Amino acid sequence: MKNRSLRARVGFALAGWKAAWTRESSFRTQVWCALAALAGLAVMKPPPYWWALVVVTCALVLALELINSALEGLIDLLHPAIHPEIKVIKDMLAGAVLMISCAAVIIVLIMALAYVLASLHALET
Image (tube, rainbow, N blue to C red; front, top):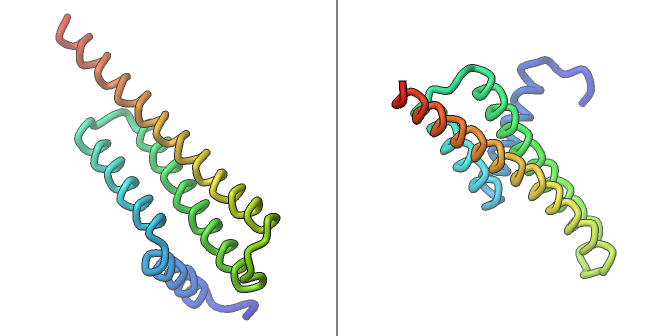
């Protein structure tokens, strides 16, 4: 598996995205939220730094969701029985996704507030 071509490695990554899309409703929800955020950027046309911040945050949310899904799948495979420690581990993984998702929402709210304030300022002048 080591030292595969770039094309092969990208193919593996795209297969991972496809598997997450197919298997994980939370990944699909996060993708739709990211697309909504990008649509909001297209409508508001903020400065480039907002684009960068929102795109990186969306990528972080999706990447963390992929990691969460992969680790939960591995945990379920290795230890399919219900176990209190397994629950704690899965809860912490979900908490990590929730944390970055909350940060993403806060960033979008701050950007929207900045947009509204700039619009109001433009109306005053």
